[in-house]
Image 1 (tube, chains in turn red, cyan):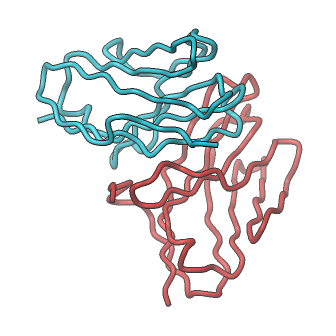
Image 2 (image 1 turned 135 degrees about the horizontal axis):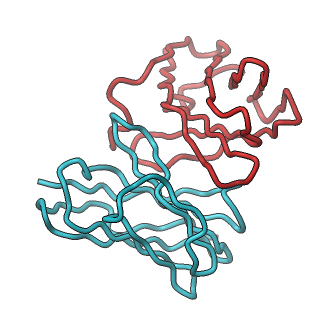
Amino acid sequence: GESVGLHLPTLSVQEGDNSIINCAYSNSASDYFIWYKQESGKGPQFIIDIRSNMDKRQGQRVTVLLNKTVKHLSLQIAATQPGDSAVYFCAEIDNYGQNFVFGPGTRLSVLP
Amino acid sequence: KAGVTQTPRYLIKTRGQQVTLSCSPISGHRSVSWYQQTPGQGLQFLFEYFSETQRNKGNFPGRFSGRQFSNSRSEMNVSTLELGDSALYLCASSSSTFYEQFFGPGTRLTVL
């Protein structure tokens, strides 16, 4: 498959444990944040999003937390499964919807 | 609904040549965005087209250009290829803006 990133930070978790992936964003004017999952050989896949007027949003097995004070975003995955192994990217969009920036990505490795 | 398709999937060119990549968005989607993904720089936004007009542009040289047709299909062109242009080029479509983008599998361009 495609090499997404050779030197990405890697998070290794045991199957069934919870995973927390962190992201620091740069633009205090960012209004909308998205987490993507990218598996080898595929394009990024939308996981969950959150607007700046919220600090938490939950999906199926995933939760995104937003701390605007320290410009930090996190993705929590409950009961991590082997199929969760991938590279995870956060992305931010400014409040004009014109500046779309991806974070560097984190590789999640799920151990059996 | 069929997903975003990109052609070709793989391409090898030599320095100085030019290349054209194609993207067919999800039916009904009018916004198409292009991204470059490399191990060193990660995912970077190139430009976005909406209804045949370039609406947003990232920070790439003029060698990178694009267009969108009336059926929302989009092409990206890179002229005078450089070794550093080797990357995975991703296309994403959405119904209106950057939000809720769906990515294609990408075109892997190798410049020799």
